[in-house]
Amino acid sequence: MEIKLVKIENPQAYNFILGQSHFIKTVEDIYEVLISSSPFIRFGVAFAEASGPRLVRFTGNDDELIDLARNNLLKIGAGHSFIIFLKDSFPINVLNSIKMVTEVCTIFSATANPLEVVVAETEQGRGVLGVIDGGSPLGIEIEEDIKSRKDLLRRFGYKF
Image 1 (cartoon, one colour):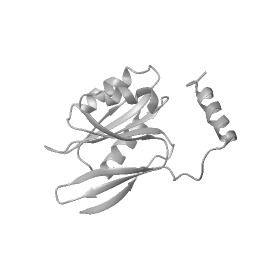
Image 2 (cartoon, rainbow, N blue to C red; image 1 turned 90 degrees about the horizontal axis):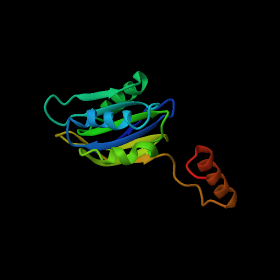
Image 3 (cartoon, rainbow, N blue to C red; image 1 turned 30 degrees about the vertical axis):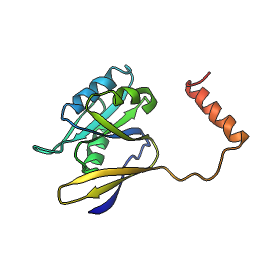
């Protein structure tokens, strides 16, 4: 087995969700969840088949995000993985709905941070072992940091 790191290409720092699913129906079911979540959401979805023709299947309503999803998922190369790139929405707005898609098994990450995917490769194929999301902590928050955190949540409208 060989361990590889695959860096997600995301030049615009879009939010994205990386997960694992189990069936080709995933790409259409995720589309339905996303398109019904908001009239303003823009997204691209890609899903990697693990058997049959083993293609990267894709959908979405934004060509740039679809391209990002396809290209990144092809680089990851792990069967039954999926990635969703989002614009005009945050993962928090759709994550529970994505988790409820009957084919979804695991969510590895939901972020806009720089991300590295830890991939294992064997003779059979590739699998996602985990992710490295952003950087390591530099310390513990102090009162000023707590105020900044609370202000940010209120500015986004998540708290009152």
